[in-house]
Each structure stands twice: as structure tokens, then as C-alpha cells.
Length: 88
Image (spheres, rainbow, N blue to C red):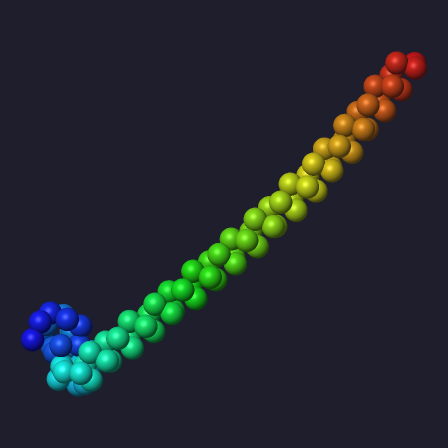
């Protein structure tokens, strides 16, 4: 047997249980199912990370917008104070 997954214990198939240890078609099928499961899990994790990053970006953009509005208000107040100072 070659070093393919599911081809038996110690030959790339590892000790993943009695079906995989025995090798053969069922061992290869089990290895393929495990690979499919872990690929699916990894894709789900990546999607969750992407969603989280999008949420963080939206939150940060909202904060930036609010801070820019606050800066504009402060500048307007400063301008008014300068105008009052000129009048006196």
C-alpha cells in the first residue's frame, strides 16, 4: 500500500480508528470524509472571521464619522469665539 490517507495505520492514514487502520476502500473513504469535514469547518471559520472584520470596519467608520462631526462642531465654536473676540 502507498502512503495515501486511509491506506492503513502508519502509512499516512494515521491511527484514526479501526476502519482507517484496516485500510482499503473504507479507510480511503473515511479519510476523504474527514478531509471534506475539515475543509468545510475551515471555510466556515474563514467566513466568520470575514464577517467579524466587516463589522469592525463598519464600527470604526462610524466612529470616524462621529469624530469628524465633533471636530466640525468644535471648529465652529472656535470660529464663533474668534468672531466675538474681534467684536470686543
